[in-house]
Length: 206
Picture 1: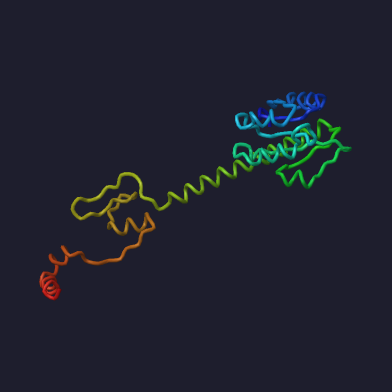
Picture 2: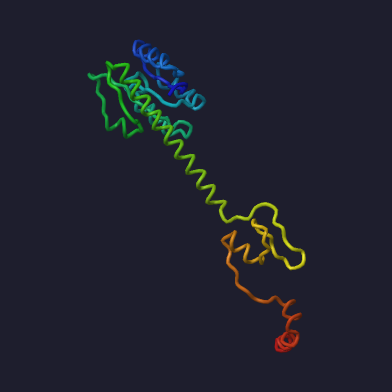
């Protein structure tokens, strides 16, 4: 669990330094911002793996920043962990309502921060893996029963050679390898060839 990009947004320099040192020591790539607008301006390009976000900041608080992040398709799935001091007004319900996944209280312990960060990075990786598997499954389901590639077909009887090397009727092969069903009839040309008397009778009656 190293090498991931973590963004910290906090207007308190002491907090920034403590978090930066702890996360960088754990081999994360860490970027820091002291206000929400500065972070939001570059966040779509950064595409961080996780964001640590202070609640009380001048100009734009953490709730507003998180709301903007969740409204952007580039960052909506990025885990946001709120940071708040015990003596600050902190609404846990509001934090989760705007899309936060967890919160850390100040003064924080480095061990707790690292544990929470690693937990949510792991959860995000599992979610991404599940999303990729679902995408692959949907693609497989979309392609199933779809004929692809070169099909050897007899120029005379129109039978197709299957994967086992056997020659089979065209309709049997298509039914086995697609979702198509067949209804049988006789076209006018074949009717004339096979049943000329019937063809002439039908022609006269019409």
